[in-house]
Image (cartoon, rainbow, N blue to C red; front, side, top):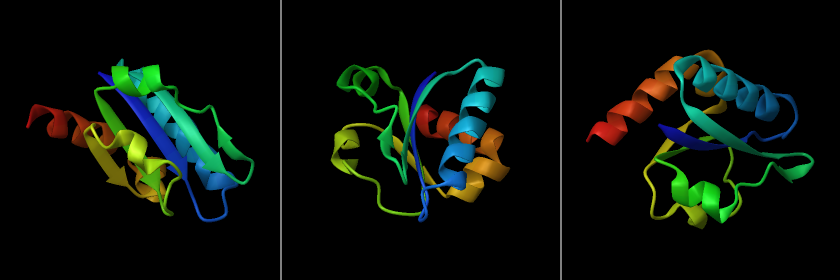
Amino acid sequence: MRVIAITACPTGIAHTYMAADKLTETAKKLGFAIKVETQGAMGIENRLTEQDIQRADIVILAADIRIENHERFAQHRCLEVTIQDALQHPRRVFSQCQQLLAQ
């Protein structure tokens, strides 16, 4: 499974980056390819390319705020979760991705 994700929290400092790290770490343990874009206090970092988006099987939107350029994912299956879900239950997030793709 190829996953792309966006993480963003209201202050855009710690939780944005901690969630990105947790999703990346968990994806690797599960054998999934992942690229995570962070939208934090420093702006957009590790920006997803059009190629990244086209190749993705699913998009994880782990955000407690509205993300920038949300329309990029209009043609993709998206799973929206909170930052806390990504931090505390990353395996469940990936399980939900698999369930969404199986539908």
